[in-house]
Amino acid sequence: MLLYLFLAVYFCILVTVFIYASHRYYMVYLYYKNKKNKPVPQGKMESLPRITIQLPIYNEMYVTRRLLNAACDVDYPKELMDIQVLDDSTDETKDVARKCVEELSGKGFDISYIHRENRVGFKGGALQNGLKTAKGAFIAVFDADFIPQRDIFKKTIDFFVDKKVGMVQTRWSYLNRKYSFLTKIQAIMLDGHFVIEHTARNWSGRFFNFNGTAGIWRKEAIETAGGWEHDTLTEDLDLSYRSQLKGWKFVYLKDELSPSEIPVEINGFKSQQNRWAKGSIQTAKKLLPQILKSDLPLKVKVEAFFHLTNNISYFLMLVLSVLIYPSMVARINIGWFRMVVADVPFLLVATVGISFFYIASQKEAYKDWKSRLLYLPMLMSLGIGLSVNNSKAVLEALFNRETEFKRTPKYSIEKKKDRWHGKKYKGEINMLVIVELLLGIYFTFNIYFAFINKIYISIPFLMMFQVGYFYVAFLSIFQVIIGGSASNRIVRLFSSKRNTEDVIAA
Image 1: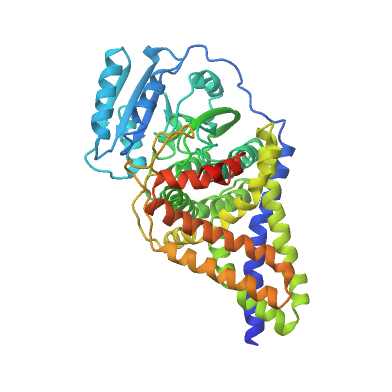
Image 2 (image 1 turned 90 degrees about the horizontal axis):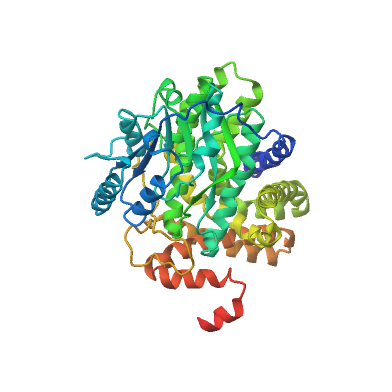
C-alpha cells in the first residue's frame, strides 16, 4: 500500500512538471502562429513629447559612468529630455555619480542626482520617489547594466500615438555573451524568454511584462495602476499586470535591441535567479485571484497562471530529484519495464519540449543558430542545478518570508579580456551549495544503481541531474575561493573553439 502511495505522489509531481515543460511547446506554437502580427505605430507623433529617463543605481561604481554617458548620448532633443540618477548607493558610487552628473549638467543636459538615505522599497521605492519630480509624460527606465541605444526613442515613441498604449518594451541583447561558458548558457536562457515568450504572449493578445529596464512607460499608465509598489521583489512584473488589468495595452518590439551585461559570476547569477523566482510567486499570490475573477478572456487568464506560477516547477524538480532513487527501487519491485514505459515518455517529451523551445529561440534570432545547439544539454543541466537555489525562493514566497532585495553585481565586463576578480560586489555563497553537492553525489550513486540493475534507459536523465548539481555547486565554490581570473580561464576551456591549445596553455 505504501509503495503505491509513493508512486501516486511521484507520478503526480512528474505529470505536473511535464505540464509546465510542455507549456513551452504551446509558447512556440503561439510564436509561429502570431509571428506576422508584428506591432506597428498607428502614426507619427505630431510633436515630440518630453521624456524622463530614470536610472536607478545601487553600489554600481564600475558601470555608473557608462550608463550616464549613454543616457545623455540618446538621439533626442535636449530640451525634451530630463534624466534622473536615482542613487541609493552606500559606497564610492555616490562620488562617481555626483561627479558625472556635474560634468554632464555642465554640458547642458537636464540631469539631476537624487540620493535617498535609506532603501525603503528598494528599486521600486527609488522609481516611485523619482516619479514625484519627473517632468516627462513618458518615463524610460534603464538599469545600471544596460547601455541605452542612441535611437531607442525614435524607434519606440510613435507607438504612443495610440492613447491606449501604456508601455513599450525592447528586447535585451548581451554585451558579454561570449565571455564564458556560463554567459553563453545564460544568453540562450534569456533568449527563450525574450524571443519566444514575450513575442508569443504580446503578439497573441495575452499579458506580458515590462522587464524592469529598456522600456518606456506612459506616466499615466504607472499612476493609474497605483504606481510602483514594493511588496514583491519583482516590482516590474507586479506593475505590468496591474497596469494591464486597468486596460492599458503593452507593445513588445522583438527586433529592437538594448545591450545589457550578463552576470559573469555564478553566485551573482544565482542571486538574480532567486530574486526573479521569489518575486514571480509573490506576484502570483498577490494578483492571480484578481486576474482569475476578472472578465478577461480565458486565454489571458490561463497564460497569466502559467506565466506567474512557472517557477513552482523548480520546487517540483527538486522534489522529483529526491524521489528518483525510491522510484528506481519501485521499478525493481514491481517490474522496472512497466515503470519505465510509464515515466520515461513524460521525461522525454518534457526534455524535448524544452530543447525545442530554445532551439526555436536561437533559430529566430541568429544566423549561426546551429552552432549554439551544443550548449542545450548543459543549459538543461544548469536549469536543474538551479532548482535548490530557486526552490528556496519559491518557498520563501509561499510562506511570506521577507528578504532584502539583493542586487546583481556588475563589473563592466564586455570583452573576454575584461576581468572581475579583485573588484568589489562579489556574489554571496551560502549553505545551499552543500545541498547541491550532496545531490550531485546522490545522483552519482543513482547512476551506479541504475547501471548494476540494468536500468540503462534512465542513465542519460540521471547524468543530466548529476552534472547540473555538480556544476552549480563546484563553480559556486571555485569562483569564491580561487577568484575570477582562474575561474574564467577554466570555464572558457569548455567553450573555446581552440580547446586543445587552451588546455596546453593552461
